[in-house]
Image (cartoon, rainbow, N blue to C red; front, side, top):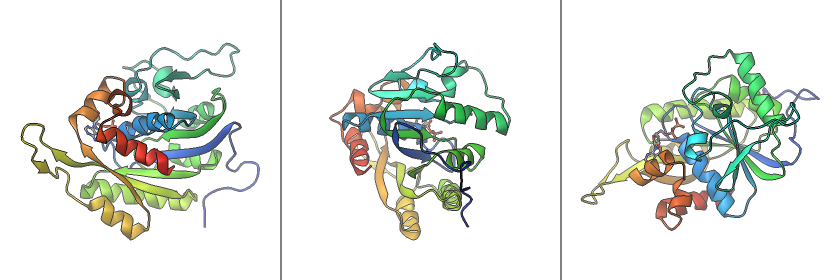
Amino acid sequence: QSAKAAGPAGPQKIPGIDRILAIASGKGGVGKSTVASNLATALAAEGRRVGLLDADVYGPSQPRMLGVSGRPASPDGKTILPLRNHGVTLMSLGLMTGENEAVVWRGPMLMGALQQMLTQVQWGALDVLLVDLPPGTGDVQMTLAQKAEVTGAIIVSTPQDIALLDARKGIDMFNKLGTPILGMIENMSTHICSQCGHEEHVFGHGGVRDEAAKLGVPVMAEIPLDMSIRMAADGGTPIVVSHPQSPQAESFRMIARQL
Ligand code: ADP
């Protein structure tokens, strides 16, 4: 039994938006937002019209990762103009609150804010809207699936057992919500020492591949734990844009081409 409600209150198509893809993780800190910003810029590099809705309400990091700041304008007092950088149209709760302000909201307020970001933001015509979800299985995930027609979800996990355990719960939730899982991305897959070239599996090895095989979903990419990815993200220019020729950038473009 799917938890998706039918009828007029059920998931709606957002006018002008062709496909909505949710970027999800079971656990925080596995690199979901880093993957989302690189995937968004990779889709833009492939010529796609792309939007990114940062719904990671407790830690909205997309403004920083995409080098965007300032409050979005609302000239008519009803709709909100999103911001844009690196070819990506962005809206984030982080742009509505100050960078150092905590979002201390209860479920219904979060759900209202998500709905507002989906329907009152002037996204324009988009081929893809990526939604950077908070980690876990909460109100935001459920609201998104119940209010908007989500084409599919991409699950980001490290190979670590604890992250995989939580990722499995996330996959179970999407199955219950009737959202197809498009694939999994293994992040922080391996680390190559920049000094000596020695390769180390900091968070274990092959965990995501085994899990994906069990679940019958594809592994879309294995992204290494790499200082240049972290530095690019901190600097507001994802590695796809700052080092387009790097193998790291190519792995994100490879995922974009699968979408
Ligand atoms: P999440 O959205 O899952 O909470 P973030 O994307 O915010 O995780 O990533 C957590 C931290 O790890 C950030 O400092 C980010 O720059 C870093 N990070 C993420 N992926 C990588 C990677 N592949 N290599 C190096 N650092 C990474």
